[in-house]
Amino acid sequence: MRLQVDGPEIWLKLENLQPIGSFKIRGAVNAIRQAPRAATARGVVTASAGNMAQGVAWAARELGVPATIVVPEHAPQTKLGAIERLGGRVVKVPYEEWWQAIVDSHYEGADGLFVHPVQDEAVMAGNGTIGLELAEQLPDLDTVLIPWGGGGLFTGIASALAARHPQVRAYAVEPDTGAPLAATLTAGEPTAVDYTPSFVDGAGSRALLPAMWARARDLLAGSVAVSVEETAAAVRLLAVRARVVAEGAGALAVAAATTGRVSGDRIVCIISGGNIDASRLAAILRGETPA
Image (cartoon, rainbow, N blue to C red; front, side, top):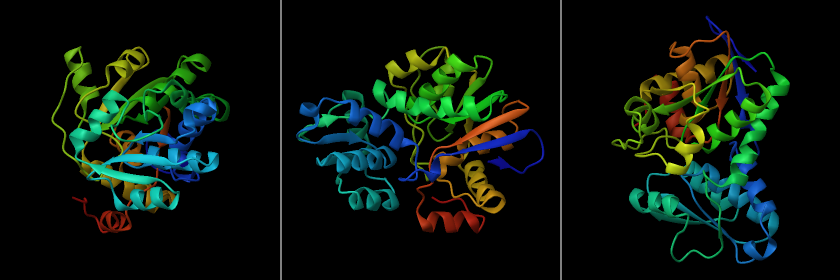
């Protein structure tokens, strides 16, 4: 879908229209379907702010096994409600404990196969199908903007495009409330940053996962950090101009494209998800930036 704005051509890859409202279903289903049946017999586990959680819960329900989802305390109610409707068991923990589960690929007391939301190779391969679709649907694109949470979406898409169309430049986009990739590219080495939770709950963190930095660095054309105000404006623009509902992380790429942070004649923005609380969306449409 093309976004009608002045300047370069901006195209939208609408992953918010997936059955769970997010691209995460691609990687979650791919990883769980590929796992040996014995590995998933006791269930599946993940640590997620909400979208990977829904993907894992969806795949677990399809398989007929329980799903345990470890979420940070600030996870939005819209996503928590969706997890529970899909049959997932939600375990709320402080942010530090949640992040440690991601680092360790394990959460004590949760039984089953741990499906890492970012650095599981089968998850990244599932994400890479987006890049393959772009190569078929828009072969003359020159730039793609991809939200960066942990790097799994970026690495999957950029790897697929590098194989099919190596001339395409892939940029990662983070909220400036937690932009370790931008800090790392500036410093030349992995660099931790201060992290402040915001309505952009599906992206941003305090540090890079070392394995993801190793995978992504040669694929990166650069990175962009955008403010929460710019992101809210992008959510509003998508709703008003394109009738597209995007969550905060889903609007990051549009925020980068429409503020002139990257160059290109034909830019694709990955709208990674649309799971936003109704109250936050209403505030944004009133011209506000949610707390």
